[in-house]
Image 1 (cartoon, rainbow, N blue to C red):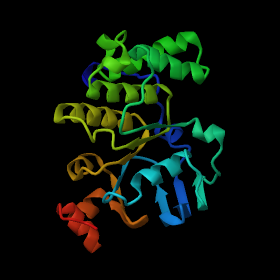
Image 2: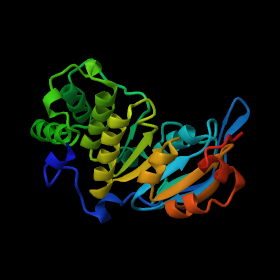
Image 3: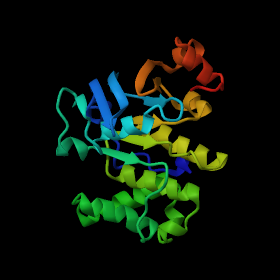
Length: 256
């Protein structure tokens, strides 16, 4: 599928342009719900390139951290900065996010993408070109006129990813996008993520799948009880995790 993508995709840009929002820095980041501290004073720096994978046991705060970074919720303490700038609307428009469960409108596959581009005020001619491009990249060109909600689970998730890519994001957040997919669909999503990263898009991916993290990650941020326990290059993390809890997690043990 990906081998048939156009050689010069519309959203491709130089690495320098693609990473102009980065680094993303978190300083003392905190989030509380009902008096409970879900994110507990995180200090972290996400660099300019590659795929950053966020891992940790259930309840560690992974999805919450992703939403904080993307600006869907506001922190109760600490700071987030993009290349030294505080978050604002223009910065938000240069990011995109894909959730675990596909969120699609009652439109065709192509119509879902066109609608997103219309909201971003992309002109009609460019909308048509971008829709065609990202559907081809995702291997969904033959499904362009199919009602989006009748697609298979894997096709729906690829459509959500294609829609996100059509917005030309510089940073793409993904919250366990393959958690409920079969191996074949997971492989197609992973290939699409690798291709997007190769073409200059910074990816921040939450996953509970150690195998997937090994295949994709350039660096790994490991969370436990709302804190960053480790943040290291992927090879270092998987070969020599420093903390006992990370060693247990990588080995497939139970982590409380």
